[in-house]
Image (cartoon, rainbow, N blue to C red; front, side, top):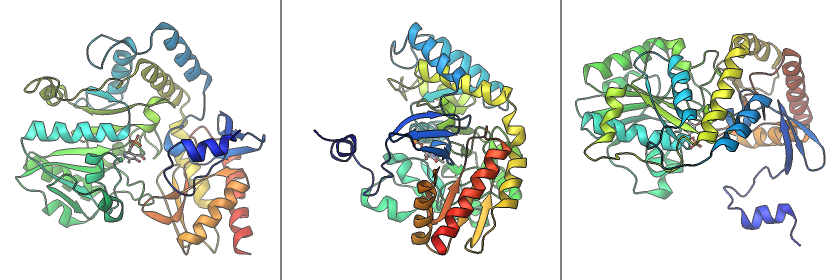
Length: 396
Ligand code: PLP
């Protein structure tokens, strides 16, 4: 009989030749346990999904209650489903007035796809400006706006009329013209190893979009839900997008994505053609119930208020001569090492020492730190100690 590991390798489609490949059997709060009862601290929150930790009892209860009431009923947008209505109300109450209408999807990539279609439909234009080292998902449209030729090239032809500009650079603003439908940008670039926008630059980008009737799309799929120190990262830059993309933590551990815009814009998807964007499972009632419960836990627990203090702990404690540079945005940090190979070895050593971490897609020489926001200061200090111990063990 094949072991679970063999089944995983032989029958579950693989995304790389070197998966982490640990068999986990339980997760709770900031902890995970493998099949051998070894425990791990989750230092990446399942890639910024588990911002309130794993399997929070209130989220579990919301899932169980909703599953007992109903699960899938019909395709998205036909019946009135209270998990969708209550979550869209709760979400939009946290957002500026212009972001008042939520289109729920299954994933982040689908939110990107929907937003790009919406921008084309609203403006009647097709040119899209995206950024180098940006990640917006792996489907064909999202891949077309991905900011790295190595990852795109094997899948050409992709969408035409897409221009990749430098983040934080004036030429990106200059490239916006009357043919531009939208600018899509991560409010804080994630997979480049965490790069914040310059506030004045972002404001100037917004201004130019206004001048040319271009929609500005902020992707906060990874940066959202408190990670950077405010519920949404854009709050710190005094710039409001026309369309906001959410995913990951949006579903509280269940699959859910969304693109959010003003109802006047969103209504263009309802006619000519009717059903301009449709999905079977988008806004699944169980996912919406879980997401709303998770957002309540996040806000009621005032975890976001602790993010900057915790960022300071990271900055103060994580110091080592092997670290070439580091960047933070709230409880989110990247540590750069001399090479991708060295970083890989440190990542493996961290895992060996019971700390789950990884690298960044466009910055393989950087180690990722993004623990659940519920982590206590003591747990964070302990995490820092394990990182330093792991670095020390590798370079000794
Ligand atoms: N946008 C950003 C910034 C992301 O980090 C991701 C996923 O990592 C996506 C979009 C795509 O989301 P998903 O994997 O749910 O399709």
